[in-house]
Image 1 (cartoon, rainbow, N blue to C red):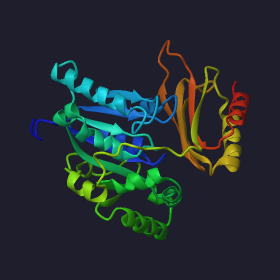
Image 2 (image 1 turned 90 degrees about the horizontal axis):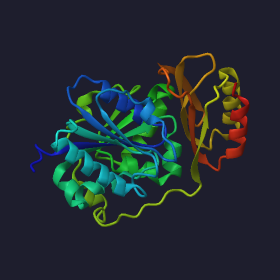
Image 3 (image 1 turned 120 degrees about the vertical axis):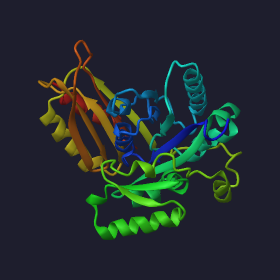
Length: 325
């Protein structure tokens, strides 16, 4: 197949809480006339980003039983093969694929898939790796997590998010640091996912030749390990939350464990409210917003995911139970 007939793929990466899902929602809501198949990967036993994504004609496939760059890479190959076959058979209709990786993913093994797997190489064209960088927490993340360095280093485009929450001097400091890691990728600012779609899709940004200069073993080295002290846990409950109690409890836990909380998010079932609530945060930054109404006969359930270093799971779970109606 020629590049023109192959299915273009964009890998959307960035550390936990950088704003990948916000950007993806922006892409899905843009009037570009294309149908997009989304492959969504979560770190942990349950994912909620599928709920946070705009629901429309897009085909959304969730992979939340491991990290896409290592334990479930075989699943990625299987899913891409299945999507291609169903698209050719007319069972599905999509023009492109976007893979949103977990915030702890190394993008190199994901990109590698499109060159070392024969069936995938023949059907898909890796267009670009887009990396979202959190201006508030980037310096700490780059210092402490090798995945953050890999995400910036392999990027074909870098989008700096949350610049409105830091000073212009801080933005310049982060920009300088990012350019030291990756001098070849253009850097642009993104505000709540708002950026020119032409800077993201069909940019022909990925160059195997350039990557091999940076990483000569790119096509043969498939090893990848995560930081052992980073883990996740999920809290579920069909009993609704009392929102004021929940705010107080989470605020207190952030004061104590905020630096250890890399990412937390969820869909909330709130007492006396027919709408679900989406809540999410990174370290000390936490926010929430009212979402869509619960459907008739739909099971109302809160699902909260916490990802962090050495978190006291029992203390979180016991406190959350006290916030239930």
